Length: 63
Image (cartoon, rainbow, N blue to C red; front, side):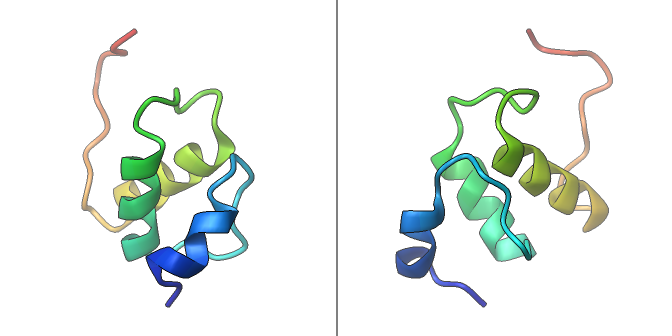
């Protein structure tokens, strides 16, 4: 598992090679101002959380 201190330099907008649920939560918190459609790492985190049934995607876009 990658800790927050290890992930901090990687929290640009590029996708991670492996995304676990803990990292997905961290990414969603750190990139809360990014749009999922424009931020590859936030998109990856959202997909991981939906797969793990930790997040239910909205049925209507909130833009």
